[in-house]
Image (tube, rainbow, N blue to C red; front, side, top):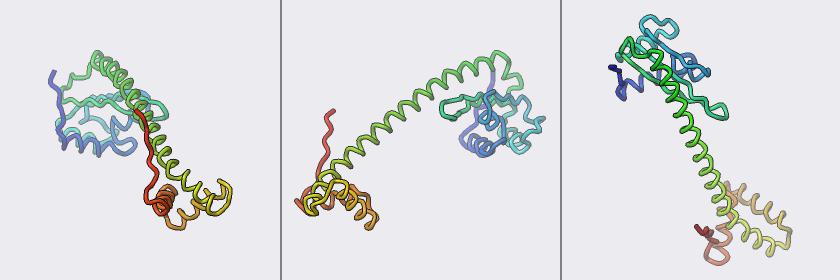
Length: 187
């Protein structure tokens, strides 16, 4: 079955046309939980600009299958064709099955990315603490104050200098002993 595969410029054109709400089959699928089938772009009155651009690119049929992810995120499997008989019931059901598998892959990718981000955030927090904790101790010794007061002092100094507390802490340690604290993680 011949199918139109839009080139990079065609894909950009189609994506730009469908970037706003209600601007074509893909956008409509993004807004709902049901697939959208545009069987005759030339006769579709829902989005004349989109239909004209599709036809300019040789696309007369569009099938957009929403992939509902977690936390309100959604993606769309968009299929484009010039063949007037491309999207039969069998093809639509196959696209929905493939969309279901793609959805699972996207969910897994989101979860992996989320876990990796948490790990990076924890590592950054540990590195910050490695610089901040000794600096707080230095301030406590010099100012004869509590840990909370020393941290407040460090935070105010960072705010006054428009720097992050870990940067001010590292500078304090370098001024005191010529080297900053280092974080070491065993892997």
